[in-house]
Image (cartoon, rainbow, N blue to C red):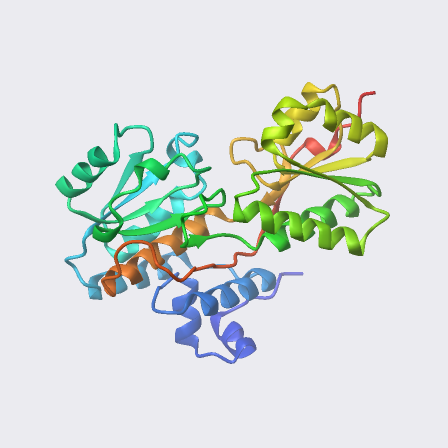
Length: 335
């Protein structure tokens, strides 16, 4: 039996919105508020709506022509761990910059000798807005002069000085990973968090994990340790694992799996935050392309309002995580 065709009118009726609002939201038009767009897109995915790509391109081109044509250039400071389209944020950044009519320069974090060098490059290229990519803090010395340029942070591993960020709903990520692993029949699940105590995202992850353990005390075992301590005491993880005899492990990143294997532990594994460079690992996909689009929209709003520097008011956007299938959960432990 053929599946039922889902039209934009059906979505509009369900959400009690106009057809034009639904159409613009599905076309990623920044004219529609972000929260409304995400609500419409979430329902569309659940109902199996399929986008008419030709119609989307037509809407985007029309909107771009009506936009202010003389927009300033912007730049994305890309982490050295990503090259080309392996960067999860880059496709969304490029797509949304093109829709809004910006020229997006891609700068590598290691190509500048100093902050003065960076500022000279930005000035010579006429760049007035910068999106700082995922970082554990190594961009700190490379941040442009804040009073002269608009700055937006996009990613998860953020230095505490950055007050404007785009992140996924980490609480939902933790729950999604636990539910997916438990649904496959694993009943004693170890959750491993190697954290930077200064990172806000790690604090959120720890709180979310403890809240989940309170709900499932017999199914969850926690290993929470700071990176600095773990580097000098890696055997603590091995002792913890054999003491609790976990059936499967959920780690904050796919790299936790590497640590387990180096310790001689091969166990069914999922990642709370999927590593794009490790597609063989099951885990939560944080929708990096959507996060990239949101950071462009945020930077655009700052430039329209002439808001330079880093906003004093935190901007936190929630993104619905999805599950990325891999081969890691099919592995068996080697004792």
